[in-house]
Length: 338
Image 1 (cartoon, rainbow, N blue to C red):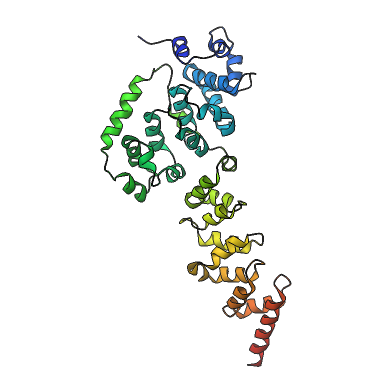
Image 2 (image 1 turned 180 degrees about the horizontal axis):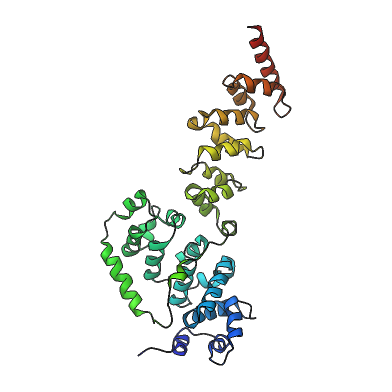
């Protein structure tokens, strides 16, 4: 026999305000306001109302709820995401809605109320950035084997991640069985995660950065995509900005852009100067010669590798130290004598 939403709501221990929104007597307009988060109520009540309305609502309500959740900040959701007092199904709802939202999953990571089935779904379907953040040396110690094995079913997982998860090897059939058993326990009328639920979008990574501590920023700088690198290389903490250049996915073009940017920090320039591979690039060496934070001795050393056209340009430049200008003038004069 199918259970009613009111019974489910009682198990969720909702407030009278939320119960009123769910009432058949409440107008569609009021329910839409609740879905959009425009009714005067606490953040906790708002999320519980959206959770239950999503289960019983039509397509328009579901769309409004997902749009609102995508626009919510992790700071606003923090009291729910971090608290073990909230129902596991609600936490599952938020994890699925914001599956590619790193800040949300970081807050959920240490919440003991989150079911393994939630993490199995997350690691089976999340994007590469989420996997790269979580799949580190501590992953298999933080999550049970059946959760770790979910990564094996994610097409975004790299060979390195898969190799790490397979030690020890876990039969993925066990993972699928565990997920199936858990899903059978969920009330069908309460949670109906349809295909459109998976099509959530990221909140700006600029907002996520504000909620990460230094160690988390460093980790993301070393593993994140180009957008993450562009954001974190500007971080005021040298450990964070410097970590971007240790990211194996950073391209020579990105390094060139940094060396051509006159506001790039001393630390970034120092790291570039230590990398022999990057210094093989003529364009990078030329940019370093012109950069105001390149040590003069280093810049002077690169002059001998510059072509005649660039040496002549530097000899007339007002944007490099006078020592470089004078050296270039001597090089031009010597060339003319021969």
